[in-house]
Amino acid sequence: MKLSRPVSLFLLAFGVWSWIIWITFVNNLVKDGSGLAFEDGNPTAYFFVHLTLAVVSFVWGTVIGGIGLRGLRALSRTSRTTS
Image (cartoon, rainbow, N blue to C red; front, side):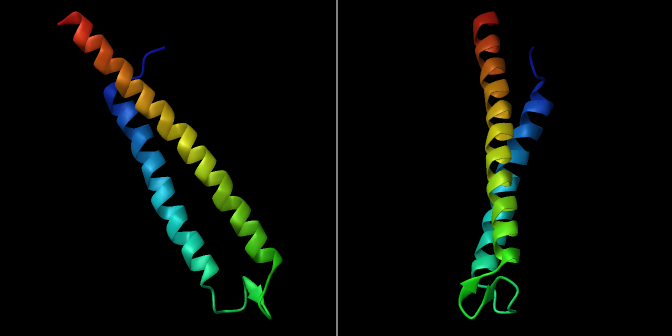
């Protein structure tokens, strides 16, 4: 199955966006001063749940971005062989 250029770009952009958003979120989570993520210096359930969400999002962002990148590479190879 071939992906179109717009779909491939969208998937790649989604992967990059996911990394940017979740890196920012994890940085904010680690620096949390409200008491939600850490209680007396120890991580709370809130911290572990949100860290798990971030890790899963990193994995999905990488997989989806990789699919987009592979789609763009396939289109590039196809255009070089047909020209």
